Image (cartoon, rainbow, N blue to C red):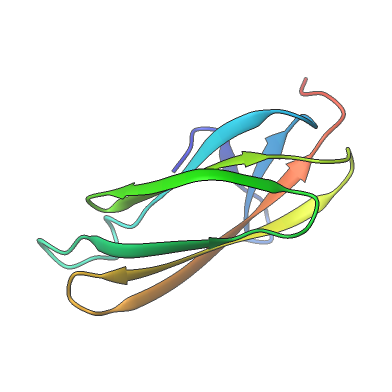
Length: 102
C-alpha cells in the first residue's frame, strides 16, 4: 500500500491529500492471495469530487492516480480485483482532502 496510508483506531484505512494534488495510491493483496496468485482485473470506483486518472496492476498490487477536490471532504475509494484463480476481493480506503499536511 502507499506509504501515505494509515489505519485509525476504527480499523479503517485512511490517506491524506491536499486539494488539487494528483498522487498514486496502491493496495497490495500479497497477504491475502494464495501462492502464485496475481491480480487479473482491477476496477476502481471513486466518488464525485475525486478525479480518477490512470490505473494499473502488477503481480499482487493495484495502483490508481487520484486528484482530490475540496478540503474537508472524506472520500470512499473502492477497489475490486479478480485474481488469476477467479477469486474476488473488494477493499476500500478513505481519501481525506486536507487544507495542508503538517
